[in-house]
Length: 384
Image (cartoon, rainbow, N blue to C red; front, side, top):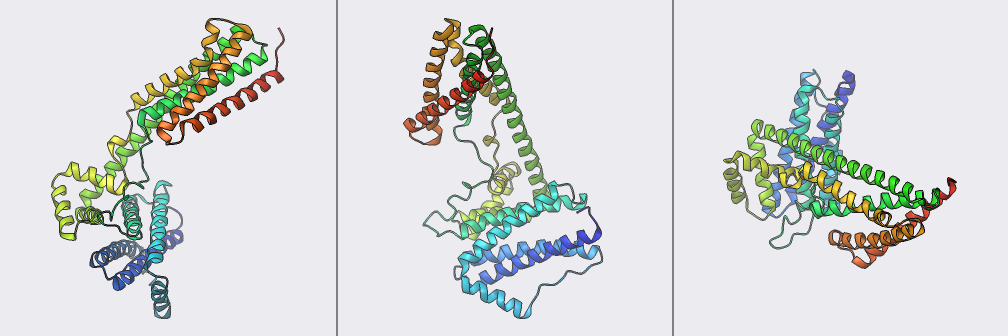
């Protein structure tokens, strides 16, 4: 929001109006809600939106401008009638989308570096709260089942672990190495008319490059994920320090969505709050979907990716250590296609697909790869 003054005021008015409209919708839902627990949740969501609106109103008044005011009269009556007519389910879905949009808007403004420094923390806090509200609405909008009111609230996290952990990384590493060097072997064999030493040299270079590249990529990716996690944890800790009551209220709300009544939820949140480290970890899991266990060790990720890629890349080269010419090329193609099938079958361990269809799919990919690279080599054939 470092643009012109008018742009700043326009955004502040827009945010104030969006928060007020959300608060109004929550109060309308609470007014017609028969379930006391759901009614209480709607009222607390309305209060949270009103706090957000109050913050933007304060920023407007600091700049010497009053808030725009929420249109009333027949427009207010129309909005109330419409919410009653379409029913709570549709209203909740619309509110969930609105909360999601608002979170993205706050994050976009914050990460784009156009927010004044003094407002950056407020943007982060509100984005986190809007994310929480969207998660709550997602559960409120689903048909409840006995003992599973909050089932899945953490299953739809924006942050998630990749299935299979290092095993999955190893399988995909083998696949990448195998595919890359099989393509090199096929193309160079075609281009050099099966001259073994050229094929072997280019294959070994490809194996080394692929292994180092995959390892470096895995290391940097894992390190970046952990750095983002640590930054989010620091921001969450700061929010807890500056707004302890609001954070406890959010934690209690998550417990209520798991089937506890309000008194039990608040008691559990209070007990957890007495252990700051555990409270921070719980809030990060509930609000952000983050946990330290979800991030791989960078060194482990690097070694797993490098070694598995190297192993996969070595497979097409094995025959060239024992024979040459057409025999070596033919054996390389044969064992590479078998390896493609085995890698595809292994993928079924983490994808839940049929091992047979997954293996055949990978074999077909290998055949297409060989044809494409062989054709390319033929077009650029080098005559000795």
